[in-house]
Length: 254
Image (cartoon, rainbow, N blue to C red):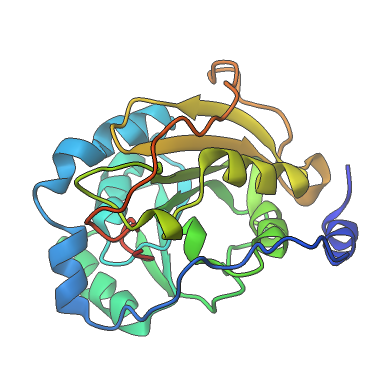
């Protein structure tokens, strides 16, 4: 497997295909995004506890909530990893990071570390994270193949990256189809960067859940955990059409 430096060099070759954000817009209106991301109706279709269970989030883990936004998943992750665990609530919008600081303080979640990161760097501690959770955010990232090398460098041995994002289709929630990436497109990008699809979980009505393991020499493990079932092939079987809730866990909306 390629080390991170060699992987970056290899990815620098022009491919003729863009791996940049499908949409760009600001997230500085905190009140607006609190209403969207923390809508009580979201729980019914997002099934956050079921997602964390499927991903094997356990006490003592260090988890990065990449694109944490208002902290919808962050607060649930904090409870799941417990006092001995840690949640890095990462976002590129300073106002959202400030909001998460206040939210964590009010909830006395001392294991939450709100983190402001630049758009091109997740600011993960080297080989320091068990899981990177990316909900409704991947399509907001530019130069994603190079970004993946930085994610790999932040994973512990056995670490994983999970992407939860909207399928294409005519759903009551989610961004317009033009802003979405299919499961196949996401898998292709991760594979191009040396990752392996370890698991696909299909129990959400509007979203796919993909779990990847990184290149062996990147600072993380290359093999699926023994508790993960065999990976299914990712497929884009959903129909195409626009819908309502901006796609993002608490970070990137449509």
